[in-house]
Amino acid sequence: MAYVPVGAIKAGEALAKTGGNGKTVACATCHGPTLEGLGPVPGIAGRSPSYLVRQLNDMQVGTRHGVWTALMKPVVDKLTAEDFVNIAAYVSSRPPQASVRQTAAR
Image 1 (cartoon, helix red, strand yellow):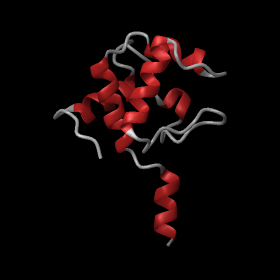
Image 2 (image 1 turned 90 degrees about the vertical axis):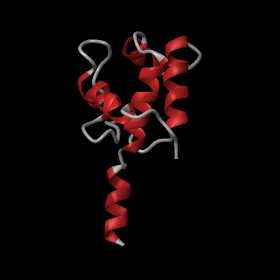
Image 3 (image 1 turned 60 degrees about the vertical axis):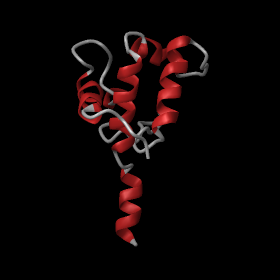
């Protein structure tokens, strides 16, 4: 559980779904329509909000390195700390569809 400001999930949804009028790129572009990942791009739906913020920050400041990290650099460059919180609030609130299917099958 994470406590976020009122309106954070809605603001994060706008950034995640539209890119915020050029501020960033819609998450689904690479992470898939349900944010569960696409091919080698990892799923982000339902991840810990603190994990998401830490990863976004590390990519922005250049302390995270990896094969796909360079692709995220322009995505996070213009984002603020408030944007990180908002995006994490929305993305972590999305249940991973695989978990939903597994629970429904039980």
